[in-house]
Image 1: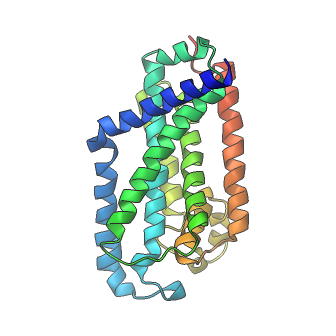
Image 2: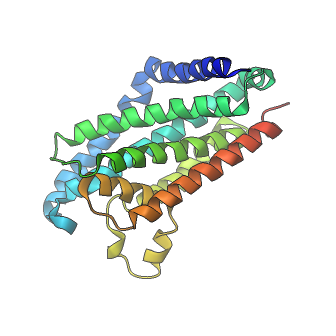
Image 3: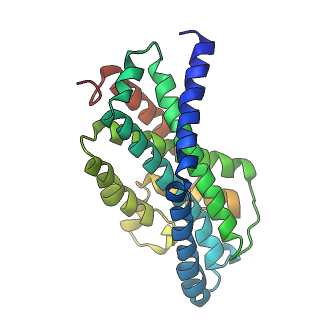
Length: 258
C-alpha cells in the first residue's frame, strides 16, 4: 500500500474506534466521571479537610487531582483497546485486516490512537469536574500534555498486548484487577513516596505509574517525587518496548490466526 492508502486505512480504524466510544458514551465516558467525582468528594473533601496543606503548600485536594486524572486516563485507555481489539478477534474481523495489504503499524496505530483519544477525553472531563472542588494553575503546559499522551499510549499498547494473548473475555479483566489497580494505588496517587520508609520507597520507584503520575503532577503543580527527565526516559522506553512487542506479535499472528 502507498502512503495515501495507509493514511486512509489509519483514518478508518481511528474513526471507527472513536465513533465506538461516542456511540456508547453512557458506558465509556459517564461511569469514570462518576467514579472520580466520588473520589473527589470522599478523599478530597471529607478526608482532605482533616489533612490540611501538604507538600508545597497545596491542599490535599489539589495534590490528588493530578493522580486521579492520570488514573482515569490510563484505566480508560487500557480498557478501550483491550475490549475493542479482543472483540475484533472474537468476531474474526481482525483476520480480514491481517490478510489485507494494510501494514501492521497502521492497525496498531489506529487502535492506539482511538484508545488514547478516549483516555484524553475522560481525563479532560475529570479535570473539569475537579475544578468544581478546587483551583489549579497549570505550571508547565507542554510537560502536562506530553505526560498524559505518553501515559495513555503506554497503557493502550499494554491493553493491545493483553487483547492479543487473551483467549476469553475473562482474561481481559485479569490484568486490570490484579496488576493495574494495585500499581495505580501504589503509584503515588494519594500520597508522596517521601512518606514511605525503605525498602518501600525504593520498591515504589520500580512502579512505572509513579513516573506518569508525578510527571503530570509536576506539569500541573510544579512538584514531583521523581526526576522529570528520568520519568520521560522511562515512559518513552515503555512506549518503544511495547510497540516493538505488539508489532512482533501481529507479524507472527500470535493468538490471531486459527
